[in-house]
Image 1: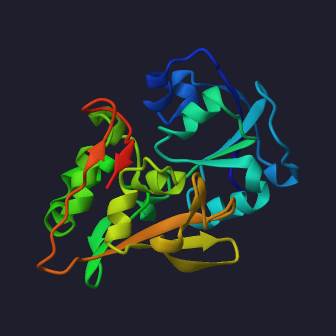
Image 2: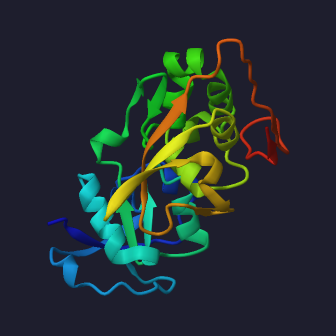
Amino acid sequence: MIERVRLRLLSKLGYEELVNNLELWSMGVLEYWGSDQDHNSITPTPNPRGADMDYFEPKTLSEALALLAQYGDNAKVIAGGTDVLVDIKYKEEPTCLINIKRIPELNTIRENDGGVRIGPLVTIREIETSPLVRERLPVLWDAARQFASLQIRNTATIGGNICRASPSGETLAPLLVLEASGKLAFADGEKSQPFTSMFHGPGKTALGARGLLTEIDVPYPAPSSRGVYLKQAVRGAMDIAMVGV
């Protein structure tokens, strides 16, 4: 049984305090508000501003998928938190936060039969500093090194950048060019999804509200191919892309 923790957002904290620590209540981002082991009896409902949130840290993929099946649209998955926590502070407060950072098999970079397999919890900084990625997937490495600031790259995950499905997402163009695909897991099974059909619009993906991205498979480009990522932003650095190609 996963412990259910009740949390309340403390609304006057700054951006850096929100994104720097995933032990949310230990830094005061969220206030501990009691716990309840019997979370299976909960009926999820939309959350009004300032209401309590349920917070879970599943240790396995099956636990996370069961929570998503239960909470659906009322849940938010969190890993790096560089986007989700800002949304919570300024836009919406979900009924439930599901922190998947404790699931160990989602945080690897390894060769896999003619390509590289990347876990969704791999940080952008780990992409940037991976010799394998730099040598074999240089266009993805090029995008990672231009991603926001070093502080954000140390926290943000490639899975979060993909699942955010933002037109400004730095890793999306390279992954599309490289013909990458993802493994999508649901409570009733899993499937492989080419990234060419992964995105259904800004903020919308084939995952819906009940799926998790568990693997990113990137085939090696042809030996004679070359690529570069070009980013147009208002500032020269530490900014989101207006255009990324």
